Each structure stands twice: as structure tokens, then as C-alpha cells.
Image (cartoon, rainbow, N blue to C red; front, side):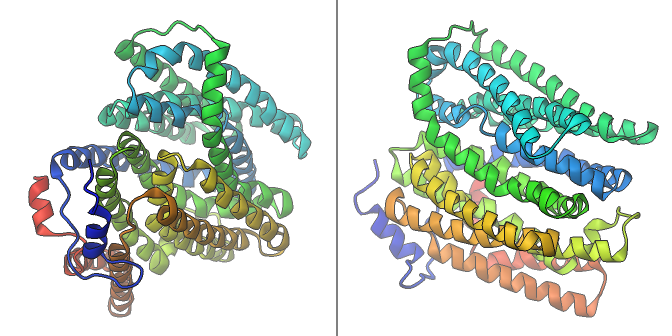
Length: 502
């Protein structure tokens, strides 16, 4: 149990909004943290082995199919993802939270939740096709939308099953499964590129890889926890749906907030503009995958420590650095050398590449904002603050839609990127306000200030190296080495902590 004066002592050591402390942060208890850090490292390593390769391959796919064709697919994918992500009405997050807190939830409720989840997936597939028809998709395009929907609904079912592994703290097993689909798809698409790639066989390949991953995971879950006989009990179904709806609302709002730009670009501007935005946003997705891989682990940890504010405080301070530090370097590199990420687009004009680069740099300022503040959303949603979070995200969506309607027809992908950034700033401010008002933990203001200082020094380093060297690879290596020194000099990383992690 936390000592009554713990928040005060934390504020004294870490600083407060009124004045930042320069005293070093408290060293957390490293027995559980050390093991958790090992889990995170394993997850990140696996993703680094597979997902950068997938980004390179998808760049090739877009270059071969063309910006307009790939823009159409991306709009279909984004529309489907909005609905697929909420197809379980929040059951994934609810199950992860409940199983993490009480292992008895699994055998008691899964016979009801699994058939309920299957029925919801079928219902949402029909809804996806209906909405697609309503906004103007017809014929072959509507068929591609349905097939994309099948694949993404299976992906969401897979995420639901993986939540059980996360709740039981089986993070390494979950990590292996998280990259299986991308690794398989990488091999299949490389084969298609050599024999002849079309939009049709690309969509089919994605669905097949998803189905294979789902079958493997379902078999593993059955082996670990026993085969679950479906037994739908309506009383249990009503109970879990009432409890999960706040999560569903947040998931829907996040899906709209992140993906509606792509659909509106393709409908209000042109498929080519959607393709330009997709080329830029792909790198955002690739980098944010680090965050979306790490944050669910913290969600499970925060949920398990719901009644332990001291442990939540330590997890927040630890997580702030784990989430933010790697992304600082990536964002600085893109802001100074983002154009090198489009080296594979040999069929694009210089004007198209410049347009994509501008959108990319704006989007990576958005990544920087999330790097600092996304963990506060994870803390809030894991501790029953879903409703106030959803209100901030809902207002952000309204702002985004209004800006899109006004700006997308004229400015295209660049306007979409700027709208996304403005909404990220707004909603992140809401997270901080909610944490201060309701979470019962201290915001590490001094650490945030140090991270901001480190980013400023890193940008100055990139700027100086560009003036002297003017070669992106040497600049990246030099800035990377300097960044290590900056982290130690600002006190973000300390030798005493590294020794305890050995």
C-alpha cells in the first residue's frame, strides 16, 4: 500500500507545474521492472526484424500499382479499419483488463464472449459493405471492400485473443504472434512482385495471411487454456457489453480520428492525393507500431496495479522514457532528412515527392506529440476513465472533420497532415488535464522538460552535422552517438539504473 505522503514526496523530487526540480527522479523497484523491460525489449526486437522490411515492400507495392490505385485501396482499408476496430464493442480491452485483475474471468465468461465476438464480426462486415455502398463504392470496388473487411475483422479477432496472453503476462509469446502475420505477408507479397502484382491479388494475399495467423493463435489459446465450448448466456452477454461499451466508444473515436482523413481525401480530393498521404502515413504507421506494441503491455500492467498508486507511478515514469526516447531520434531524423524515405518511388515526379515529404514532416510532428503524451491515455483508459477520454477524442474528431471539409479539396495531403497534428495537440492537452484531475498519480513534469531539452539539443546536432557533412547516413550516425551523450547529460538515463537492469 502506498504511503500517504507518496504524491508529495514524488512532487518534491520530480518537480511540479510551478517549478521543475533538477533533483534526479526516484529509482523504481527494479525486480518487476527489470523483467518487464526484458519483455518490452523482446517485443521491440521482433518488430524490428520484420516490420521495417514490410514498409519497404509496401513502398514497392505502391510504386508498382501507382498512387491512384494504391490510394483507392488505402481508403478502403481505412474505412474498414474504422469499423473493424470497434467490431467487438470494446470486448478486447475489457477482457484484457478483467483477466489481468481476476484469472477466474476467463473460464467463466469466455464461453459467452467467443460466440458473441463471432456474431458481432459478421454483423460489422455487413455494416462495412452497407456504408461503402452508401458513400458511392460499387461493383468490383465494393467486392474489394468486403474482402478487406474479412481480413481486418479476423485481425481484430486475433487482437482479442492476444489480449488474453497479455493479461496473463505472456508478453514474449504475444510478441511472436504479433509479427507472424506481417512476416508471412512479407514473403507472399515478395513472391507476387516477382510474378506480377495486381490490386486484386494483393488484397487476397493480405486476407490469407490474416486467416493463417488467426488459426495458429486460436489453436495456441486452446492448448494453453483448454478448448472453450461456446455457450452463449444472454445475462452474461448483457453484463459484458454494458461494461465494454465505454471501451468501444473510445476505440471508435480513435479509429475515426486516425483513419477518417484517408477516406475523406479519396472522396473530397482525388485518389492520387490519398496515395500521397498513404505514402507518408505508412512511415508514421511503421514508427507508431513501436508505440502500439509497447502501450498495450503498459495497459495490462496499469490495469493489474489499479489499487496500487505507487506501482502505477513507477510504471508511468518508467513508461514515459521507454515510449518517448526512441521516437525523439526518429522524429528529429525525419524533420531534417525525411526525403530519403521515398527513395523507392522511382515512378514519381519531383513535385509528387516534394508533396509527400511535406506531409511526412508535418505528420512526424504529430508522432512527436504522441511520443510525449500517448501513455497518459493508456493510464486513463486502464483505470476506468474511458468516458472523459472519449469526450476529448470526440471533440477532436469534430474539429478534424470540419478542417478536412474546408481544406482537403484545395490542399490535399498536406492539409490532412496539418489537421491531424492540430487534433493531436488538442487531445494530448486533454489527457494531461484528466491525469492531473482524476488519475491519482503525479505527472513527471521535470522528466517531460528534460525530454524536451534533449530533443532540442538533438535537433541542433542534426542541423550542425547537415551544415558540415551534408550526407544523411553520416549525419544519422553522428547524431545517434551524440544523442546517447545527451540522454546521460540531461539525466534521462542514469548509470545506476542500467546497472540494475543487467
